Length: 104
Image (cartoon, rainbow, N blue to C red):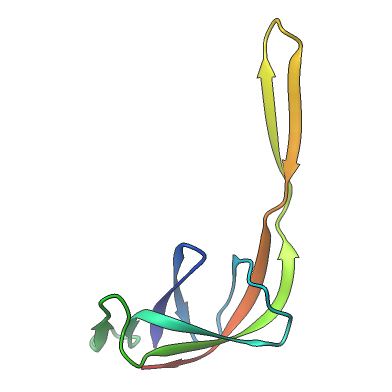
């Protein structure tokens, strides 16, 4: 069984036991998270429920594994002939979760 959830302005296709990195949530490691499912289907794709915008009664339960920051991305600005150079780094924070149960 898999589901489509929405968090942080993005949509993710998830299945039970899967771990993924999403936009940062203000939760500590070990705490449960509950998502509303936008779409729920079995593995064969024969039984599909599509929500408008969410499937009624369908929930996806997950557990927070860790909080972290992604690898550094360098943002370099340069303008020729005017001695203008800027080098700024950015590390995007994320929350790593593991999907525990999908209930339709």
